[in-house]
Structure formats: structure tokens, C-alpha cells
Image (cartoon, rainbow, N blue to C red; front, side, top):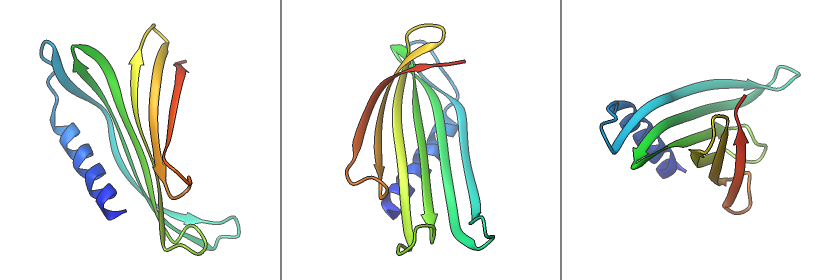
Length: 124
């Protein structure tokens, strides 16, 4: 899990640096956030901690698309586990003003195997 966290932090930091979008190639950061949470159950007992990474960057490689990364790394949230994680890495291509095609790859301790999602996104 540490390796995945290190890769995600590097990706987020690197994507934040690139701001230019010249000609046929470029990167424009849209959202790059790191959040840290203290979790509580409804009865106010501690439910551990979470670090959440969100990176959404517009990429241009001959055409425009977005790369989206969402990752939650938890400590002492799931009973019986010291740590767990959930990550989604996605590629989004806008095909109309409010419609995009979306491909996502899911990793995590919450899912038994890595999974692929292919779908259509409608933006309000």
C-alpha cells in the first residue's frame, strides 16, 4: 500500500507543476487536493483516520481528455485491519457539451479484484 500512496503523491505533485497547454500537447491542473480526516461512528467513538487524494487534470495529446484519480487510504477504519485503501484511476473524453465517455480502473482492499468500469457521464 505504501508504494501506491507514494506513486499517487508523486502523480499529484507532478501534475500540479505542469500548467502550460501548448499546441498538441499539454497539461492543465483542474483539481489537486489532499484531505486528512478523523473519522467517528454515530456513537462518537473513533473510526480511525483517512487521507484522501483527488487529482483531476486536463491533458492534451492531440485531443483533450481528463485523467482523474481518487484515492482513500484509511487507518483503523475497518474492523480487523490496521489499514485499507480504495483507488479509482479514470480517463474521461468529452464527446458533447454535457456528455463524456469514461473508463475507470478500480483498486483496493474493498474489492476482491481490480475492476474496470466503462460508462457514459452526463454533466449537469
